[in-house]
Image (cartoon, rainbow, N blue to C red):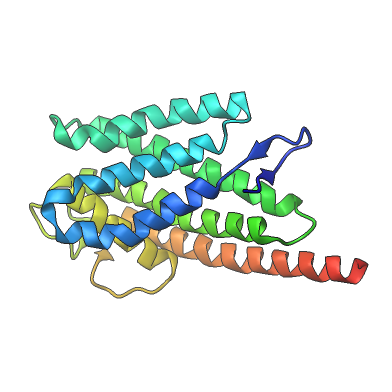
Length: 224
């Protein structure tokens, strides 16, 4: 398995596990939502995904420490649904998780921006960053849903925190891809603002990265 080189000292950041963990989370979440007895698997999938991202930073001690510190409150927040609710914990945990996810996206984007040839590893890196955006935006949506319960229409009243998180996970990817079925819609101002930013960032990412990869490929072919 090839690794991705992103800095001058040739430290390797391997995000292959992160990509497959994110894909598994996306594929399995709809199935998990149908069976109430296995809803905890969503939390397990989210935990494995973030740990895979931290593993990708293992070759750089400083980044590993920062990522770990950011993930600790996210980990506690993820599993806090099984303990007495502390809303402040959800705020801190999900925001730190958002920062961690965006940091991972930033590092992966550096891989792409420094590449001189297009190969399967570079394509996998671009896919990973895009898929990770959906997870990243889910976290502030959850915070908004906790502090402003009526921020999203289409989410059943009285359902548990896990079901809300899974519904917003689905909503995040529908927004990221600008598919917009309309079954869940943002109502409050902050929810609408987050949705607008996610849709714009998602589309800009595709335009920039695809054109960048095509430019690298064309430039490499011309040199040859």
